[in-house]
Amino acid sequence: MTLQPDRYELLTFDCYGTLIDWETGLADALDRVARAHGIEAEREDLLALFAQAEHPIQSGPYLPYREVLRRALAVVGEGLGFETSSVESEEFAGCVAHWPAFPDSPTALERLHDRYKLAIVSNVDDDLFAASAAKLGIEFDWVVTAQQVGSYKPDPGHFHEILDRFGGPQERILHVAQSLFHDVAPARELGFTTLWINRRAGQAGSGATPLADAVPHAQVPDMAAAARLLLDE
Image 1 (tube, rainbow, N blue to C red):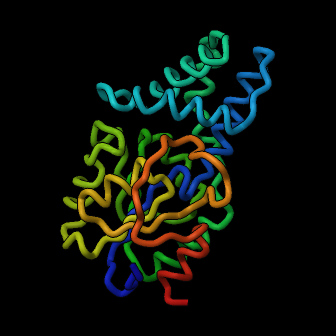
Image 2 (image 1 turned 60 degrees about the vertical axis):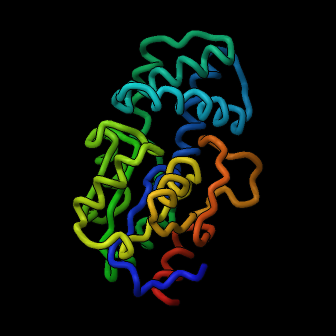
């Protein structure tokens, strides 16, 4: 499918993995804990363990994302043969605030905001996103978090909420995201047009997200390419 930039009024973004480099931040945080227990593990192995741990927790009764991180770290520790301390658990629960933005994200968002309304739909707590937002350099028109809707993608709660806030036709929204599992699959099922930011192009596996066979309407390798596409350059 060829996207038609003039068709869209609102671009909705996943944040972590799309705009913020969560795999680098997450892998670094996991590696610090593992090394403190005398364990050296490959980055991709740590991310895969986290992906296996996180989704079952998010699929249960709603918990704040800080608590999801605490519990996921405990599961990763069990998988690697160690028990995490309360200090390690608390530090890991706050590590989101230290995850870096992808270098191309702030400029791409600034350019896109000249033409489109922009919104965040993210699996995170409000205060954790606020720390990340400061690194992205723009004020989003809407921010929808897991804390606000009481659920985590791929549950459809975020998407229903942004439709309500936007108030316009769904056909005027383009959802932009890196995770096929958390974003592209549920967005497509609900009838959204999707643009996949394939940050892991050329890498094996699915990193910190579970595998999914969802097919996006279009894909680009990064946010710089997304901006060029959506600004007709």
